[in-house]
Image 1 (spheres, chains in turn blue, orange):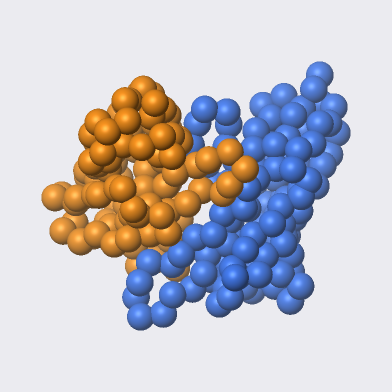
Image 2 (tube, chains in turn green, purple):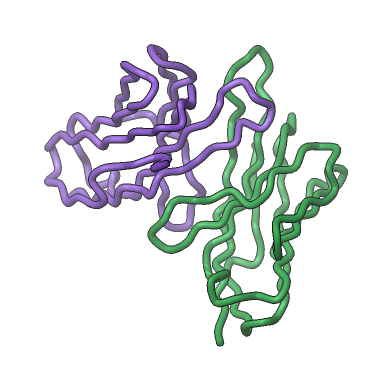
Length: 116
Length: 114
């Protein structure tokens, strides 16, 4: 069964500190992996998208890595800010052949709280 | 640019009543989607539409119907609501056919069925 698992479920860090969130997946065939940020009461917003051949991708203070061999990804947040408090969702796209829409499989998210 | 708008923001609905959740996008994306988000679960796809005039079933379609009369609008209808349909509903859109198929999400509708 195609699954996406994230750890930890929740995390509390102090403002200015770094943190790393983990994502393991069993999705096959693999198309791409995305990280989304979801603020409380809002819709998810895309941070990064990586294909099979990409090992790392950055978006400001956010850096995502992908190891397609071990089916693991991480999201590293540098110099955290209060506005980073949100749920971070790992999403893996399952490749559908024949022109159909790729299926997205969502993790349950890591809830990050940045405290002053 | 508004992106994706959803209405209403929240709603309390009596079981057995019908309701339509509205979704409109102004990005001229050809694909649109409806998801539900429940505590402890990842977002789950209810229905999707690759292009105007076509729709398809997602992972959890039972109890829901959709239509896609034009590019911009993708309403989700609950014909006879049940308490298990209490959830937060997100509409999304993307350019179907591109490799990334990046999806852009609306702000969500919080629905409570009593």
